[in-house]
Amino acid sequence: MEAGVLIGGLVLLTIAGAPIGVAMIMISVAFIAVTGVVPLTVVPNQVFSALERASLLAIPFFLLSGELMNSGRLTERLLEFSRELVGRIRGGLAQVNILLSMLFAGMNGSSVADTATVGSILIPSMKKSGYSAAFSAGITAVSSTIGGIIPPSIAMILLSSGVGASVGGLFAAAILPGIAVGVGLMVQTYFIARKRGYERYSEPFRLSRLFSVFRACFLALLIPVILVGGIVFGVFTAGEAGAITAVCALFLGVFVYRGFTLQSLGACVFRTVKNTSSVFLIIAAAGPFSWLLTRIGALDGLETWMTGFIDSPVLFLFVFIGFILVVGMIMDAVANLIVLGPTLVSIAQAAGYPEFQACVVVAVGFLIGTATPPVGVSYFTAAYIAEESLEKVAVALVPFLLLEVALLFLMMLIPPFTMWMPAILGYV
Image 1 (cartoon, one colour):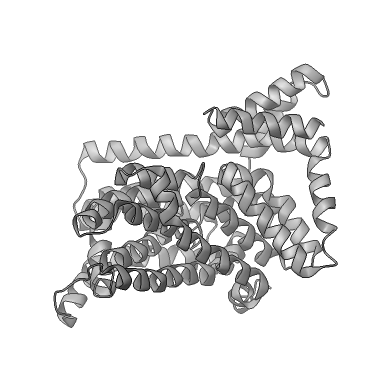
Image 2: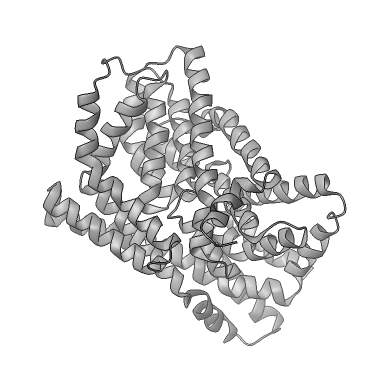
């Protein structure tokens, strides 16, 4: 009953339009004030506990890196490089959209930032080239989930802080799934584009041109290699890696690509502070909310219910993934990763799945929710940029979401998909 009041109140406030962070803190305070189950001083204590994890320091740095790269004209060079690599495949601009999301993912770790950046650049161009607005928005929203999978991933950092897993190990486990999602979307896009007669880049391929654009963005491409390699091989922590990435992006933007003015740099910092505040408000509010769910036994009840299906592996698989997808449709991914992520990972481990595999499945499942109606942030953002109705974008999303869900099942059915890379690097 108490769990129903907490969760039901949260869902109602979210549907009414309240930001998820505000909704969680309001429900927590109201529940304690009415029931008197614990002193109200628990709220600030749990807020502090939620924010004191050192790995969370990486998040503002990764967000700043993404802003600096976009404003410093690095994204333009990555766009040219992507076009030379895959633009001549049928559905060229859509293919560029996906590859650019994969490259951008290695620099800022945020699916929402990916949607806003890539979408603002490519959706208008796709519409002018004959792509439907709904398709343009749909492929942008779905491909942006790669931004939360391929390391450095903010989703993996959030989950590792709750589970206590190695950030480097989680990054290693997410590499192959992230690439698989990108390649799968490219193949699917090719067949859709061929059926609908979408364009492709018509300029003849020239190796000299490819070399030229590669040279122009070579230093930018080095950043994710250094960043992820440094974390995975234990050279520096996630927070240190984020700071190094931000400094490198600033250096390249100012001294190499000369894309900054004082005004644009100030705008980068402002947007970073705004986006960081949004994420950390959710993290802070999730502290007392998840603590209350644990205290009243709601999370234990979820664990008991799900572990009841362990004797039937196939049924457990469908219940586990189905629960993640349904919750992801109605709750914010950040809140889900913090509140439900550790419990779901524990349930999967009880069913015999390794920790890294369980973490990747949970993270990817909730990230799919960012592109899923009715509350997916990437879904809303892409539809807004494309100036298309949410209903039409939702229909265009269906084939791409089905592909991602199929890959999610494969991640759970085939352990080497997520465990091979951590094993090679000594995390297992």
